[in-house]
Image (cartoon, rainbow, N blue to C red):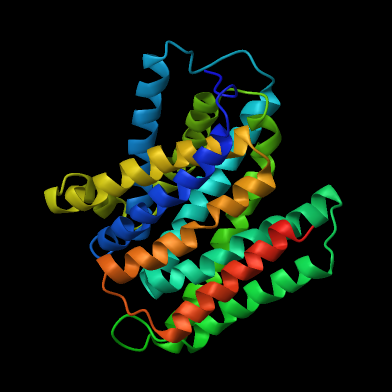
Length: 301
């Protein structure tokens, strides 16, 4: 299905993706109070793939289509890195620092994209863009001196959350760089499903080697756990990921990444109003500094 004829469809996808993702983050934070990160990530990928397959069958499109094996390898590899690994790291970081502080760490996504573009695409930054990177790094480092929801987060837990969160952003950026050229010349739903197949297959392969394998499956049959896992899985894995891929496909990567980064603002606001996490002056300042850095990196070229 080609939507390129709809005016500004890429920008529409790119701005609605972070809004839906922000709601999903709040719900994932709630689910994470009961469900471990690996279990939650596995479940959301199962739900996302089921919905993706239903979608592609409803459109009478084939799940497998003639394409170079390299295309399948790229999609599967992108899914392993961006869905299995990056999303697991995201859940681990979210549990450690909370949604509001995560919204600041999330601004590290743009510098990750820029760094990879410099290394692999021979791109360069001007002075304004380097200033933007410095602002984002400053905002992330400022998280170390911020207080957690209701009480001070232990320093060791906070530093671990920051490190894991930044690694999540970096691995997500790798998956984006990998799949962007393929997105521009292939079907959106097909891309969506094969990335999820890659991520889910990788998790199922390593599952038998985990000591908590039985507990993982037990959560799938627990009504209380399912009640918390299903809503964010539908919103975050199906709706948000579909919109994110649509934004990457139908508009420039730089524009899409800038609009995607507004998820930091949405997450922060929702964390304050829905999770009752404190909106301290330091947190607001850190968020604004990070978003200013994103703006300089994206539009300073």
